[in-house]
Amino acid sequence: MLSTTDLESATIDEIHKNVNVRITASQKLTSKVKPNDLLVDYSYQRETLDTKVNAIIRNFNAKAIGVVILSIRDNGDLYIIDGAHRIEAMKRMNMGNLDVNAIVYFNLSLKDEADLFVLLNNNRTKPKRSALQKAAAMAGHENAVELNGVLEKLGLTFGDKPGDRIVRAIAMANKVFNRLGKESLENSLIVLMEGFGSHSSSFSAELIEAISMILAKYPNADKKRLAKVLREMGDAQYVVAKAKNAVGNATFFVKIVTLALSIVDVYNKSLRSNRLDRSMIALADPRDY
View 1 (tube, rainbow, N blue to C red):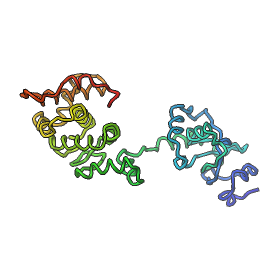
View 2 (view 1 turned 45 degrees about the horizontal axis):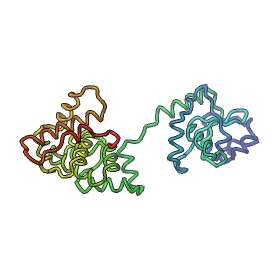
View 3 (view 1 turned 120 degrees about the vertical axis):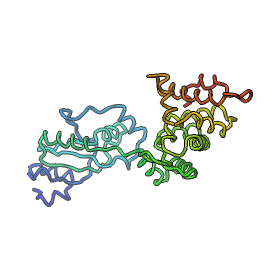
């Protein structure tokens, strides 16, 4: 029979042969396990979601599997406490016999397992977008490096809190960068900064998308005039709020179109030539943005 000390370095196979070993519930060991050997107790576990499993499969990265948390019961069965979606994805990809790193807890009652499941999920904090963007750039992800380069060129940086020269709309910046290109994002940020200033409120998701839409629809638009129009319209937050209030509970895209149209209308004011065709924004297809 294995001693308590032996358990720290024992393999799962050795543990299965010595399931009568009794140690305190706080003790655990690290080991390698195979997905096909793992079970799920749905008396406290959530049902695995196909959408989440499929997302893991689509973006599968063996390094991201990490460590699963298990409980070994008196009969030697291994039950998943944390990692059920990752394990299910591996099974569906015919990777059920590959080794996975695990932390295995001993002598947990069903209540203990459920408590640990709740603790792990309540304490799990998703990283902030700025942290993920920073990590992606540090990891050398091409888009993240280029995106950071656009902001650095303009003296801006990504962040989560309001402040000067901070861009908080990280998801929107990525969206514009990926769909419309590096130059489109850069020009949009320049127009916004010259129009509203360098405070983070100038770079809201709504304003970045509205200006990028205008520049995409009207590549010959006068960017200096566009920035001047924004200055004339007033405070950035007021301009966005006014457009939103005009359409009430409409979709985000409708609010963006309304905001873009309000900017185009002021841009066209007093112009007899080189006016921007309003219908190009009004008839915009949301699938293009």
